[in-house]
Amino acid sequence: MWQLSVLLVVLVLLVLAVSRWRWHPFIALLLSALALGLCSGIGGSETVRLLGEGFGNTLKWIAIVVILGAFIGEVLRETGGALRIANAVVRLFGEKRLPWAMGFTGYLVSIPVFVDVAYIVLQPVTEAIAARAKKPVLVIGLALTAGLTVSHTLLPPTPGPLAVASILGADIGRLLLINAFVGLFALAGGVLWARHFCKDQWIDYDEELAKNLHATPAAPDAETAANQSPLLDLLPILIPILLMGTGAFLQSDENSVFQEIVGLFSTPMVAVLVGAGIAGLQYRRRTTKGNLGELVEQAIVKSALVIMITGAGGAFGYLIKESGVQTALTDFFAELPFLGFFLPFLLAAVLTTATGSITVSLIGAASMVGPLVDVLPYSPELLAAITGCGAFCVFHANSSFFWLLNRLHRVPVATLYRTYTLQSLVMGLSGLIGVGLLYLLGVN
Image (cartoon, rainbow, N blue to C red):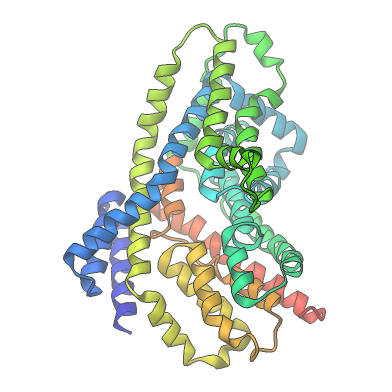
């Protein structure tokens, strides 16, 4: 069990380094990964190799998406599109229901789209809504995060839930119905937490958003732009989401030209590139001043820090996965079969806390629970739901999304622990309440 002890010490030092000692997250994450590898007996050269591999695996898909998403945000900011969208959302739902609107938006969007990508694409709208409604950006952002995380964790066709269904031998249709019900409880817990417990979590970035609200450069034809439908402004956001969703729902073994085209345009990089192209055309149509090249440079500069820290977080998580912690956890919990109903929840929660990866947590916990399916008095579908609830708990410094929020909105680390980390715990426990209710109603 020494691997668990090493991991615990490294995680404590990481938290202290970024929150108390004020080390830069990039340095703290890299040093933590190196320390974990060396202390776990992986060896120096192998640790460095795994560190580079984990860093590259994280950035190979997210770096370009982050830059293109930032470019879309720059265009929406420059043309006033983000403000028009925000005004429309506020009018449609009212200020009191905005967190719920963002939560259900995330719930639908993240079914076909990865959490990180969806949040990056929706970032300019999230910030504009927060400024327009005079609410902390964390209220709106964490409400959106709750919806995004629920779908990613519980609903097929995202990879985690599909893998859990396969490992446990669960019926996909029944799993989808049970997890959709449980997901509503988890979503409600996350949104209520954001709405009531984050309402006073103002940060310096909120002041900047408030200043930019009235300082947004207008297009030359300001009156025409103001009267323009926000649906056109939404196109650079909606088109990538629809493209990625099409790829998720039209998967086929048929190797046709159509399938190749769908496969190409549904990849996150190409889908967001299409959205960036639409944004560029809209920018050209609405203003004759300014320079698209300058907007691209601004997007790259603003994205660089996000990309590097996200890569470091991904590398740390990769070292955790390769260090043998999962095997040690399996051996530990194999000696505690009496936990019964809570066993899948605790397994997934420990794996999420240790690795910072929902997918790793789901697959790892399901692999441990799989041999017990015929022993435990619960259906595979209910066990899958319990496992999914545990996978929410808890996100902290070893999660790449933790650092994404930290850099996109410049949220202090200590504030993220009070808000995002605790929200993930609340969501897991709320989902578990939903599972318990189903069981009491006779669903098994």
